[in-house]
Amino acid sequence: MLKQRTIAQTIKTTGVGLHCGTRVELTLRAGAIDSGIVFRRIDLDPVIELPATANGVGDTRMASVLEKDGVRVSTVEHLLSACAGLGIDNLIVDLTAEEIPIMDGSAASFVFLLQQAGRIEQEAAKKFIRVLKQVEVREGTGAQEKWATLSPYHGFRLKFFIEFNHPAIDGSGQTAEVDLSLESYIQEIARARTFGFMQDVETLRGMGLARGGSLENAIVMDEFRILNAGGLRYKNEFVRHKILDAMGDLYLIGHPLLASYNAHKSGHAMNNKLLRALLADPDSYEIVTFDQVSAAPAAYASQLDEEWAAA
Image (cartoon, rainbow, N blue to C red; front, side, top):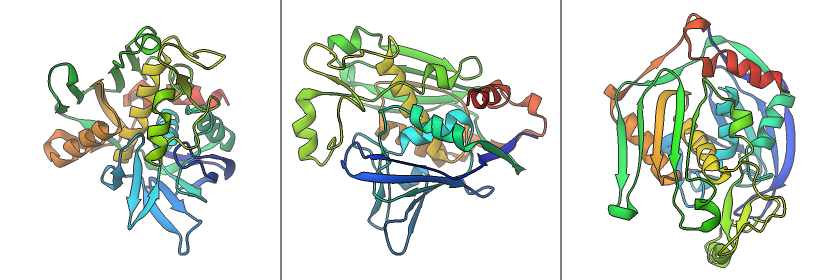
C-alpha cells in the first residue's frame, strides 16, 4: 500500500516575509493521518488554524493567501510546493506572523528543512485526486488571453508558458515542461526563485506588498537586465519558478493530483479558479488510493524515495 507521509521530528527556522517584511518564526510538526497541511497562527490568542484548502484562499495578489475570520496566512505556495515535491501529506505549520518566510525566494530551503526533519509513513493509504476529464479556465482575449487546464494523466506533469515582454525573461526561455515521473523536483524545480522588477517596487510597497524583497530572496531586474550578481540558477529559471508556484497552488486541493497541468500566462488567481472549477464538477475527478505501490505512478513511488535519499 502506498501510505501517507508526515515528518519524523519537529524542526524550526526564522526568516522574513516577502510582502509584509516582518520577521517570522516557522515551526514544522508532524501531522495526524488525514489532517492535511494545517497552518497555525500561534501569535494569536486563541491560536487560529487555517487548513490548506482551495476554498480557503481569499487573496491572490502576488501570492496565495489563506484567510479565515479576518486572519491571514500569506505566501503559502513555496512551502506547499516543497510538500508536494517530497510527498508530505500531513503537516502542522506554526507561525508567529501572517506570512511564510521567503527564505531565498525558492522552495530549496523548505526542501532542506523537510529532509532534515525526516519522513515517516503513516498507517493509512495515501489519497490522490485523479482528474477524469479536462477542466479549463480562461480570461481575456487576443494577446491578453491567459488560461490553465487540468487533463487526465497517470502521473503529474506540468507545462507552462510565460510572456513578460522583457529581454531578460523572454530571452531565457518562455516554456518549460516537467514530468515528475521522469524528472527530479529537487533538481529541476525547487531552486527556481521568485522574480520582480525595480520599477514596480514602489507601487507594490504602496499596496502593502514586497516590503521584504531584496536581491537575497528574488531575481530583480531593471528595464533591461538581471541585477543579481550570480545571474540565473537555471537557463529558464523564470518559467520554472512559475511551475514551482503552480505546484504549491495546486496542492491547496488537499491531495496530490494525478493530472497533466498546462498553463498559458497563468498565476495564483487562475490556478485557484482552476481548482475551484474542478471541485465544482464531481464528474471531473475521483479520489483514489493504491493498494500496490507498483500500480502508482513513478512520481509518487520510487522517485520520492530518491528525493529523500538526497538528504
